[in-house]
Length: 41
Image (cartoon, rainbow, N blue to C red):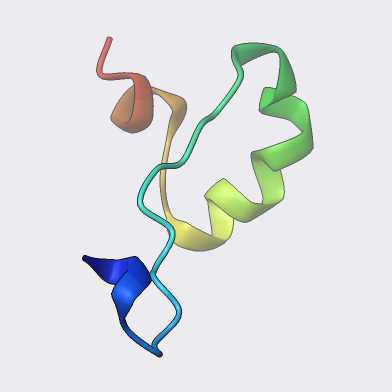
């Protein structure tokens, strides 16, 4: 349905690879997210 509109669709999925944790540390800190919150472990 989204492809039939003139509005760009939002990003629907976000993937976080565990091995990339050091690369996203600053962004997670800014969002006040933790690995525990995202991975729910």
